[in-house]
Length: 336
Image (cartoon, rainbow, N blue to C red; front, side, top):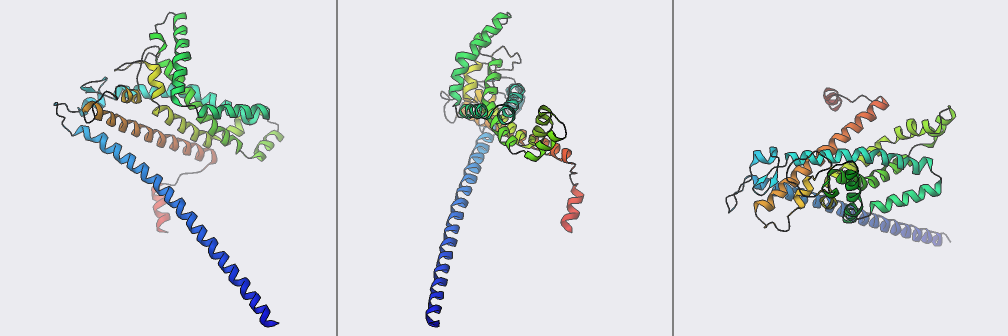
């Protein structure tokens, strides 16, 4: 009898051991797959950045068969982008101010829309609005561009005609601003909705219990607590606005120099990169200078993201009374 029990116990132990070994093997395989996919993503990003950096720097040192050479000084200070003279300074300024003005429209509209979806509108209406925002986020940029040409440009043209302002048929900086705001709105709204839903319900109930009105609670408690997630959405929205090309090319017209009148044609770094690239000869300065412009755009996006993240962290530390340790304190802590 004892021998039978021992055999049964041994059999159970062996089965348990085999089951554990299978689970451990499965776990290792899954971890390996995830590690491979993560490594693949990193490699793709690094290869893309490496290629863009090499291709962007090359025109500054290369002499082309027709005797052309990219003038470094003019490239960084020039006011026109045209054959033989490739300057990005004022186009860089155009890009920043169009993006800034579009954010003035899209940020308040996005945050208030997210607040309406999560805190104000009845649940069915909130879900409907959220679905609309999700659909808008998935619309291709070329469709937004067609909408801009067919609806926004005529609207801007009629608005200008009403006040006696020439608008080049509606293809203008104002049209670009509206299109950029429209394209960044779903990104910022979606991130803001996620951040607002994550706010602790106890904080909201405590605010209401202390006599604050729903409006005061929404703006002073909910938005304040969700500001980190909202900032993340703003960063993504700005990144999309800075990198948009197709839709903006369709509504801005053609211009090679600076233009701060929002009712006139304008240009951004992405539009000058896109314009005429099909006709440019591969290996020519006209073709390779676009990689240099792309490198500048990448640096702008990286610096903007780092700056906004620093501002977000500073606001968070100030709100929570967190003092950032100095370098000296960090060194002492590391030694300890």
